[in-house]
Amino acid sequence: MTAAPLRRLCLVSRQGGIAGPATFQRRLAEGLAARGIDQCYDLRDTPYAAVLVSGGTRHLGGLHRVRRQGIPIVQRLDGMNWIHRRRRTGARHFLRAEINNLLLRWLRSHLADGVIYQSQFVRRWWDETYGAVQVPSAVVHNGVSLEAFRPGEPQTESPGSRLLVVEASLAGGYETGLEHAISLLNALGAIGRPVELIVAGQVSGKVRQASDSGSPRPITWMGAVASPELPRLYHTGSMLFSADLHPACPNTVIESLACGTPVVAFDTGALPELVEPSAGRLVPYGADAWKLEPPDIGGLAAAAAEVLADLPRYRRGARARAEAAFGLDRMVDGYLAALGWAG
Picture 1 (cartoon, rainbow, N blue to C red):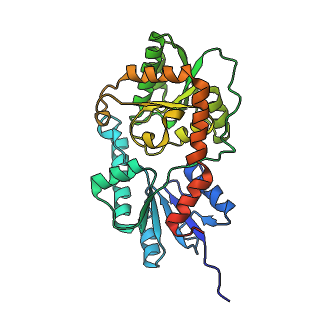
Picture 2: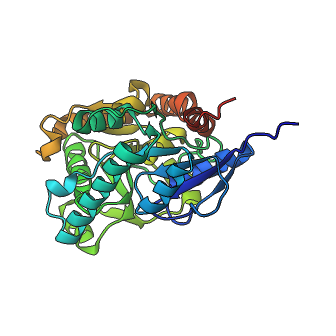
C-alpha cells in the first residue's frame, strides 16, 4: 500500500513564526489548516514537503541545507524598499532597508525554486529591475475571510462623512501618505464636502503634532487596531484613502472592500488591479510619484466627492469586488497551485 504524499509546509518569515502583525501568514495558516494541511515555522522542524518564505529571511544557511535535501523553496515577494532613497529616514533605517532588498534579491536569484508575486505590479517591478527569474512564477493577490470582513450597519452617531487611513505604520518615510490625506481634507472642505479624518496605525508624536496643526478639522488617532476590531473600524468610514504609494497588494484595501467601504487613491502600484470603478475611484497621480513630486490633490478630491455623492452604489460595488476576487479560499487555492498541491 502506497503512503499518502507528505503535505506539510514550513512557513518562514522575518518575524519567525506567526506571532505579531503577520496578517498574511496568519490567514494563510488558517486557510491551509481548513484544508487539512499542517504547517511549521522552523526549518529544523522536519519533515515538511516544501518551504514558503514570506519576503526575505536571514536564515540563508538553513535554506541552503533545505535545498541540498531537494525540498523545494518558494518565495512570496512584496515590492522593494524604495522610499528611503527619496526621503531622509535616518542612517539605521536606510541600512536596514538596503539589507532587506539585498536579501530579497539573493533569495529570488539563487535559492527560490518558485516565486509568488503579490500582484502583477510587483512582478513587473522585479522583472524590469533585475530580469525575469528562470523558475516557475505566479501572481496571487492577498485574500481575506469574507465572513469576518463583511458589510455592517454604517455608524450613525456622526452626521458627517468619515475618511479612513489604515496602515500598519506611517513612519520611515511613509508620512507622505498622511500629508496627502490632510491635503485631501483641505481640498474637500474647499468644495463644500468636509470630512472627518480617522487614522489607524503607528504614528510618531512628532508627526501627529504636525498633522494636527495642518488639518482643518481635528484628527481622530486610533493607534494600532487589533485585527478582530478592524471590521468595526471599516464600518465607521465613508471611504478609505489608500495612503501608500506604489503598494504591492495592501491588505487594508482588500479588507475595506470586503466591508463594503469604497476606496479612493492615486492609481499607483497594484491599486488598478484591486479597485475597479464600481468599488471606488483611482485618479492619476499627476506627477512623478517615484520622485515624490506633489500630486494632483484637486483630482483626488473631485473623485472622493463623487464617491460621497453616490455612496450606497459604491458600497455595493466594493463588496461585490471583494466577493469576486479576494476571498481567502481563492488565495489559498493560488498558493496550493503554485506549490503543486492543487487538487
